[in-house]
Image (cartoon, rainbow over all chains, first blue to last red; front, side, top):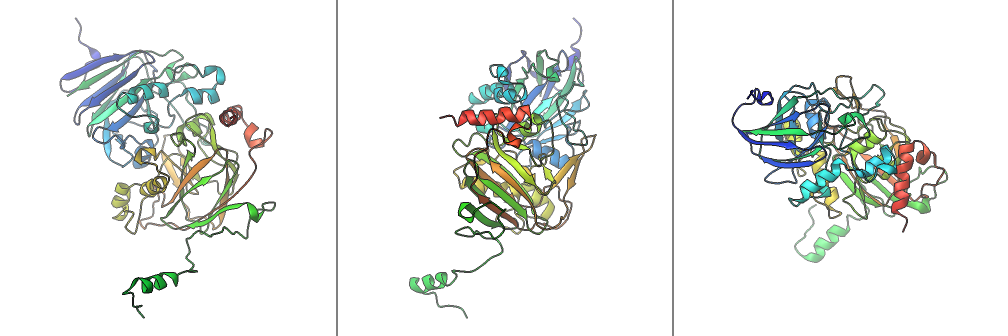
Length: 211
Length: 274
């Protein structure tokens, strides 16, 4: 049996290894010091991503604090994912994709009605996944804030024009996140089929936690 | 002279003697504004308040109300949260606001969208042009690092803690304080993602008018922009004036400007179909 190349360069012992099916949610607690690797198995699959502090989940990922602190919209190697109280939650320690998005937000049934029309209201969406996963732990709609979209590309033009465009990811590319505190990771493996964020074809992703 | 305040009646008299005092930042009750736009009756005034440097305000506004903000001296920074007053779990969604409108820069004709696909407020007029949907506001840690203190009780309060207090006055909690927009202080984005803060100071008296498209609670903090490059904590007072106005009509140009925006108004109208 050949070596699992998707584990290459990941230090420590693998303590959790899961395939998130296309269109599905995923929730996992990651302890301080552990590393989460997300693998885009088939390429250009947006992974919508939220974080909560395990000891106080009113403290959570803040896209605005993260981009303001680094003075840049794009999440790259070295980016510190910050909370709404300015604390470091996770750090991007490696990424084989140049940058990731945190301004595009998550698709929802409701925003789909605006972007594409009311005929899309019944389609599955990331906010549905975020809600389903968070409800298991007593969180709800008020706990959903601007998220990260790993493997998604949202450029901003000089006139402010902005949009989700063709991805820059590819099969097998990955991002590594080191937990700086005990965190709860909530993911939606994006089911969107109306824009290029998933290549119009949602696919599985792999989540590997090493300690 | 120090008053003798040894008994309650003396303390009462001392307190009552303050009546009629005027401060730079204060509400005016009943509201009065000498500079309402033509066609607006003073009978329709709802709110007149000057928000202190480093201060905050929270207010419920009816559907159709107009909210005018004025950067009185050129260094206000209005960090704004917006909630559906009837159901505050519905609130401003900054990501949907920029994504649905295919544009990151706020200004005249733009909509502030909720997480339920509805328009909470729209920009009727914008005399500033420098706003920011990306950076959020300062917090206790960032102000402590930058100014040595970020506490509400200190000389250099931070935006997040002001928004928390404003939201709390309507019964809301830490988890209700969502990503905000900043009005009057701007940010532009370079091709490589770099954020360029546009901080001024600007000419005095720039103003903008927002229209409430739903029953809303607005929470406004007036603290220095989180990327203000100046070493000193610098912010000047912000004036808020609101008046009653008609609910947006079917042929309103802001309502019909884009197919995405029109559907957001249709979702609002569907919500109020009761």
